[in-house]
Image 1 (tube, rainbow, N blue to C red):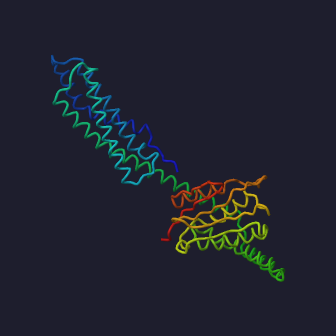
Image 2: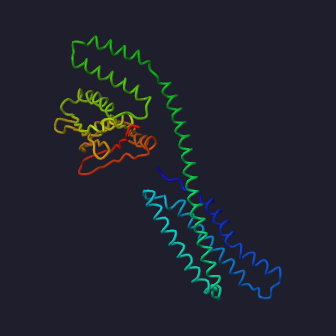
Image 3: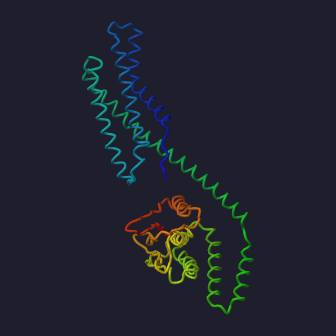
Length: 344
C-alpha cells in the first residue's frame, strides 16, 4: 500500500510560521532601531533579516519534509533503525545549513558574523531542529491516522456492498443440499459419481461457512482444497496431481478462505495439462509461509477469466493481515508465497 504523503501546503505553512518566529528577535530589534531613528541603522540590517528568514524557511521545509514524508516513503526499516537514520540525517542537515549560512553570509552581505551572533545562531538552529523534528513526526502520525480512518470507512462500504450482493444472489442452501442428496440417491450405484457429488457438496458448504469469516485455519483450507482437487482430477485424471507437504505446526495457523483453491485454479487455468505435459502443483510450508508453485507450461489458448483472482487475494492480505502476497518466478517455476498468521 502506497504511503500517503503529508500535503506540501501544510508543510510550507508550518515552515513559514517557524521561520518567522525564529526571525522574530531580529525583527523586533530592527523595528526598535527604525522607530528610535538610530543613526547606526543601515540597509545591511534589513538584508541580514531577509537572509536569515530565507535560510530559516528552507531549513524548516527540509527538516519537515524529511521527517514527515521522505523518511517513510521508500525503505521498510524497523522503527529503531528508521529513527536512528533520521536522527543522523537531521543532524547532518543542521551542520550543513549552519556551515552554508556562515559561508555565504560575508559573501552576500559584505560583513562577518560576530562571535556573539554566531553562538546565538547555533542555539537558534539547534532549537529549531528539535521543534521541527517533533512537528514532522506529529504530521506523519496525523496523516497515517487519517488514512487509517479512511481505509476503515472504505472497508465498511465494501462490506456493505458485499452483503448486499450476497443478498441479491442468495440461494437457499437447503434447496441445493436437498437437490445434491437426491442426485446422490439416483447415482448411488456409480461410486465415482457419488464421490464427486459429495465433494461438490462439501465445497459448497465450506464456501457458505467461510463467507462468514475473514480467516480460516490451514487445516480447514486443505480439506476444502482436497475436495476441489478431486473435481480437477476427475476431469484430468493422471494428467493432474497435487503434492502437499506442510509442517504440522502450521496447520492451526490462518489464511484467508479459498486462498489455496484460487492458486490451484490459476495453475490449472494458465498451464497446459496433457499426457505429454502433466501438471503438478506443490503446496509446502517454509519459514512461516505457505508456498504454492508449479512448473510454467503456458497454454496455447488461454481460458477467459477476469484476471482479478490473484490481485484480489493480494488486496485481501493487505486489508486483513497488513502483509503482502509475494510472487516469484525463477527457473521456469511460478511460486506464490502466502504469509501465515497465528491464531489469537
